[in-house]
Length: 281
Image (cartoon, rainbow, N blue to C red):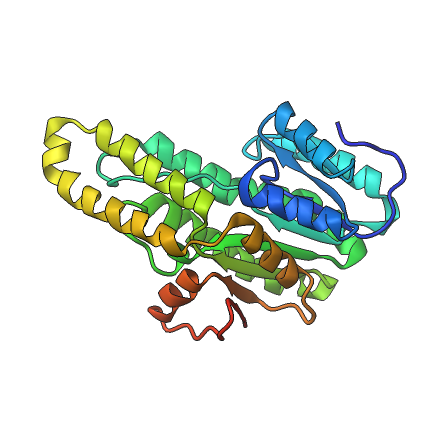
């Protein structure tokens, strides 16, 4: 449950804050004095963040694909914030579905869109009244694959491309209310990269002999290339620090890039990031 005790100072909501990048973002913002709300996958994650932050992070176990659960959580946070409203929403929760599109279950692809697209929309819409009160900011964490899709990553690329388009539309629709929308494109992280290679290994191990004949060689080559990218992957905490810097940047950029690999990949799509690990547009 969300605490309804009086809150002071700047406020932030971080989805997917129980582990990985979201956890580091939540802790980083708490260290800067923010009151942090967010979602976790388990009660254990929520307790861990409460203790690690000295009580400044309040996570709720919430499945963002369940609209009623999102609305109940957002209502509790909004009540706790009161007239001050919400200063910052960082949409970070996502899932990864990898493998040849031909052999992926459609239900798995649907779930990717339920989390990465419809879940994100549900969270944004639920917090818009509080964001309007504070003339706050939405930060949508995204991936470079939205601009440069790779083989065996179709659902992830497509879902992130979709939320990038929705973010652009939100930016235009919410501008009259003083609510800003920033898309932060991140590169590979050590935690995220290992998850990707593990997912590919599970796909390979689950293939039938016929599927392995069709895709086994190219999937193996792709997995090796992905593993080599780990050598230049960003640490999650370092990525979180840059996401926080962008989230507080004024004036707000419409888009920003974190990670040398993300910059390199976006150059291939005629982007022009500036040196130093971040690009603002």
